[in-house]
Length: 425
Image (cartoon, rainbow, N blue to C red):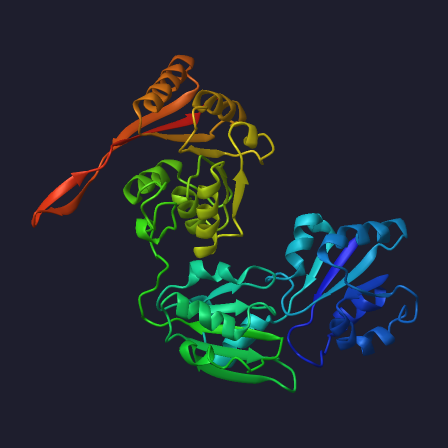
């Protein structure tokens, strides 16, 4: 089967070159949205197969698309055209097709994307902007990008209206951010409008065309959302007040991150995630890695969920309710694991994790109590004797400035012992 993916750009009246017309003419089937099929209707009418039943088909939901291609194969339809708005390989259907079909089966006809068109309308260099899609995603996922002095180009949907995005800016402390709304680009009703976030959020009755791209130029105000690893403890929701409950404190968190060295493709387990100190930090800074946070305590689960929303990391942080190691059995295989809590099951958790990790997999664990430290030291010694791990251990302690009777004193926290194991075989 050969699949041609034809980008239609952002023009209301599409003019296709002869090569693309030939692709449509030779196709057994052309799939696209109702709007896309209408856009190229004249070309389809002129096709040799234009009046054949099943030649034009409305693109089904993504979850049904694989089955549709299977039915084409069974029906002997081996030359399929998929229409795409804008650039098919830029937040488009092309990405899905590339993941599910061999490159030899795919042919792409590129076109200008709505993002490119919006940037040209506004005179913005695309390489200096950050493109973020909230289309089909929770609007809160924009939060990790809301820092001062940034240019964000947003692909939106009905849940991420300009007013909703303006409120996100305000909640982040960026109320003076500029929002440029590019509506129906390439159509007769095309319109550009410009607002300050604090003003736009009050215009609740103002309705924008559903085909829009929003460009946000964030203000130079201080954002709630961090720009560098080491999220302040006080920004976390915990079971004992913000920053005071069951979370790993910032200095220790940074040491853990340095030991894990997370990469884009990593699958990470955070066992005994508590209120999410480490899990949030990992998922916030590594958008393409996927983190599984395992916690059985109901109160901490609620805080973990609230922190996931607060920091907008729903896309790459999955919450797992249950006790380890039982709750680990159905999770995707990790290549990195952090154990921050074990509820008395540390030995069995260590055994399961070590058996699960492949060569070069990394295990990092922390200990505050002497009992936990002893169990990890025994595991450490076992790895030395087996010669199956590259090992490292260090102790992190800190003292924080406080006042006592008007005088400055440094109050020490309990030291945390960290262990790192990289599996050799």
